[in-house]
Image (tube, rainbow, N blue to C red; front, side, top):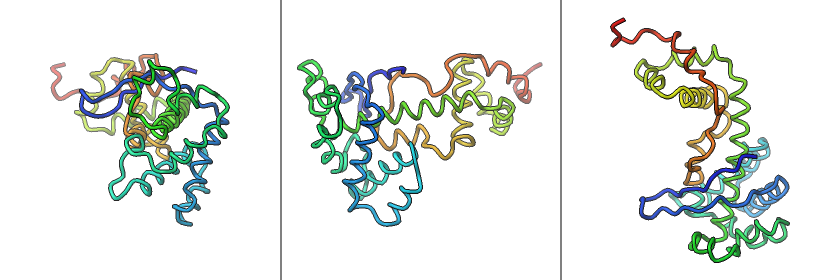
Length: 241
C-alpha cells in the first residue's frame, strides 16, 4: 500500500508543524477503535442518530460517527477533530492497550516513540494522535474507493459534464497539465455525480481540520485523458481560428 507522506497542520505558516506520518492501523485495530468510540458516545447520541448510524456501513458509517462526535462533543461552535478531540477520543486512547496489539501504534499514541519524534510532536495529546491515526486510515480507504471509481468513469460522461460547466471554468481546467486535468475533472465529476454519497475531500478536511500533504492524488496517476477531450469543447470566443 502506498504510504502517505507527513501531514501539515492548518494554521499560520509560523505555527504549522510537520511530522512523519504515523504507523498504519490494520483493519482489525481500526474496527475495534471505531466500535469503542461509538460505545463511548452511546449516552450522547439520540435514538434518531443511533438509527441513522445503524442504517450505514463502511466509510459512510465511520464518517457519520465522527461527524456526530464533532457536532455533539465540542460545544456550540464545533472545531475540527484534530484541534479539539471530543472526550470519547480520550476515553478510547486511555484503553488503547486493550484494543491494539501493535506496539508501534501504542507508542505513537502515548508519545513513547523516542526523543526525536517526541520533540517533533510535542504538544499533541494522546487523543489528538488517535485522531491522526483514524484520519490516515480513512483517507487511505477513501483514496482506494475513489481510485477504483476513477477507473470506471465513462469518458463520454466526463465530456458531457465538462460541457455543462461555464466556458471560463472549462478553459481554466483545460489550461492544466494533462495529468492534473485528468485528476481534477474526474474528482469534480465523482463528487457531483458518481460518489456523491461518499464524503468529499472537502468534507474530509472540514472534519479533521487538516489535509494530506503532497501525497498521492485521488485518482489515476497517468494517462493524458484531457488531450482527447479538447475537441469536444465549443470554440473559445477569444480564438482567432
